[in-house]
Length: 202
Image (tube, rainbow, N blue to C red; front, side):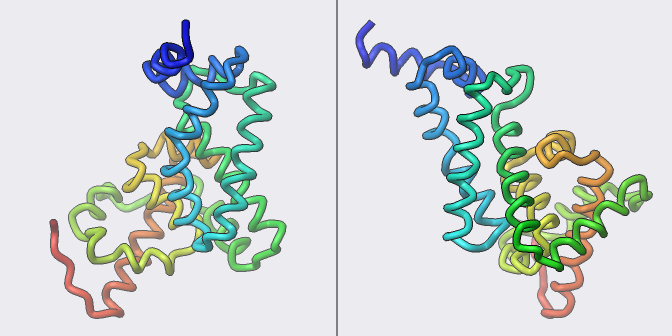
């Protein structure tokens, strides 16, 4: 099989299959994994940290960890590769925040930890968000959300992840993921009201 045939063969594989192929020693599989996932992953990191330089560092650290974990055989193809990748990036971001001893981030984490087990509104949070908020009107307001709230909004509506996938990626319960969305929606509504914005469904 020549090189072009090999590349074509790899292109037919899913991300999960490519990860397994790399663990089995096919270096070309990793090149394709990186190519497929780099834009989406960098967008996620940048949305959370809001600094291109920091995002570059975290992106590189994330893929270093990905390489190490794959070489150790720590990925299990039973789960989605994108969710596994996002969880690693999330952990790198949280480590970065903790190392900087960012007090506001610590406060957010403590606040979010208390959401566990709390009852939410009867109306599904995602439905109320879809019905009353639109990204064209409020996307710029999301920069003002705490990091963990920005993260769950990005995962849910830009990466179209389920709350189960978000919970797995961020290492928390589904209840906590829902709680973070609940806080994010409430904060966005307050910002919309304070800015006298009129929202339109698109």
